[in-house]
Length: 509
Image 1 (tube, one colour):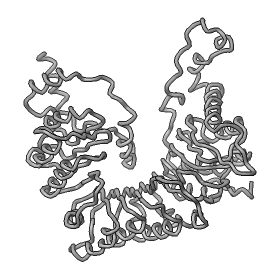
Image 2 (tube, helix red, strand yellow; image 1 turned 120 degrees about the vertical axis):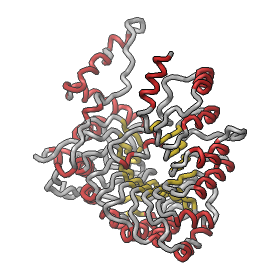
Image 3 (cartoon, helix red, strand yellow; image 1 turned 60 degrees about the vertical axis):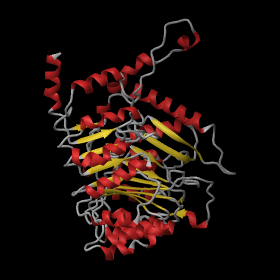
């Protein structure tokens, strides 16, 4: 037992971050919010073990811990938080799925936050990524008011901050990350912040998570902030924006934000009712053209209903402007029209953005022009793409879809979406069955054509005799990772891939 404790002490002193996933790039940090819902605990710890641990250890478990993220744990585990508190702790983050409705008692989270300034004098970052009871929110506000060097304050609440506290946050000189919820009345009074502070509001802000009724509220906030160096801008708009609103927002952001700082831009609108497109719903590349000047863009998500009329030239312009893209979502709810993007345009996008891993886009999957691009001497397939959200693409033949995708992204193994249908265009089959067959064909292509990496898949192939014999040998379970070794994804500098010297428009194909 003594030797076990000595080993624990040896490692405990070296642990400085707990509950976080390490990513290669800082813009992937938000994936910490998404992973806990997908990854479960491998071993469940019984309460008697925890009680003995707390009884035996009447001091901080990790004396040099600086960052603690509390993810996906039962509410009863909340009383364990104080044994992680220490003088070196600078960041406390409560991740998703950590909501506790019955937050009461002497060991409740509200009581812990009320005393955390005394327990952790160096704590400067407080984050809660799930809705909390009012008592917890009030305790978090109390912490912010007492913290002399507040750097991050992300507290999820359904109510907007009262004007005095909003002004207090705007005056913090070291505040780098904040979540704001602004209602219609606050949006009209934002201008008073500029006159109430000696310097522009939120002068050191790098990450802004904003919930507002309309995109105009965000435009007002950017204007009163003046020059800024935002790294992350995450906007949730309650009202559906129109393309002119998006164009105005793009222009204002281009004027006030540093072109070399912005890496993450997300604009999301919850789809709470049926959307009826109008003549003002057509989204063109000119509406987001000012955003193309942010050459360091890594994650661009546009989750709002539009009629997207992008073509191959437009998608190629995006790829040339943002060569470091990792995630690209355009029109999460589909293009709502017959897409003009063909396999050739998608090939240009994947070639110019070699690090692209997740893509949501609609295309005309019946096109046969992928060979025009793949036959060029400088073309190299994208080995990073893992997920393709085809949305409301025009579907055709399964083999054509699989062959075209394999030629430009051979390691993509998840294809999701539905189909675009109208009077002249009908889907060949149910979209779920269609994409399922495409995944099966791609799996077989990797097994037969990429033998150096996927020869191990041979033992999972079921012959016709195996399918007919119910009493034969038990088949091996299908491998969880259908893509083979993850290290097959080689990171390439986008500058190593010069743009292909050819026109990507449909007319040129």
